[in-house]
Amino acid sequence: METLTIEVATDAQINARIVQAVERNEPQPPGYFFGTEEALLDTLTSNRFAILKALAGAGPIGVRELARRVGRDVRAVHADAQRLALIGLIDKTPNGKLHFPYDGVHLELNWRVAA
Picture 1 (spheres, rainbow, N blue to C red):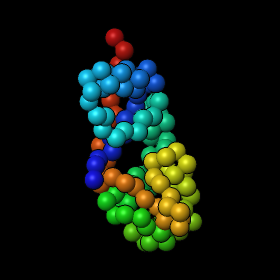
Picture 2 (picture 1 turned 45 degrees about the vertical axis):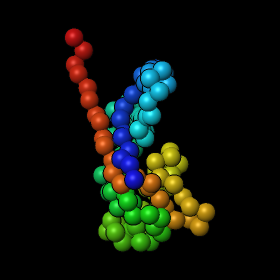
Picture 3 (picture 1 turned 30 degrees about the vertical axis):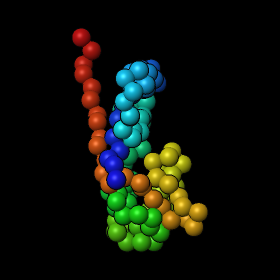
Picture 4 (picture 1 turned 90 degrees about the vertical axis):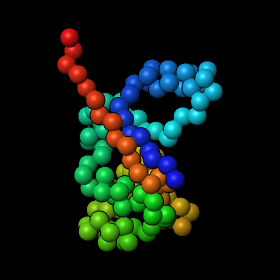
């Protein structure tokens, strides 16, 4: 399995990386990008991050089992999982199970004060 890199990047930055990778004939590692730091932090709450950790490397899991693994209410886990599936961070199998096809997450969050 692979590690998913989650980071903040603009569309221009993402496109530049793709062009460079194509020109160099280099494969791109799996990545998920947010447009702002605020969007990343609003989306990846501690509860949602716990869901990703519980799903990593585990294969498809039903929402009840996932709720048991993260120690939370089924309805709350379902709502958070729906949000993660809606934005494409996790998958739903045809039989309704939840799947995160990676064994880990590398989170990059960098900023600097403008000079």
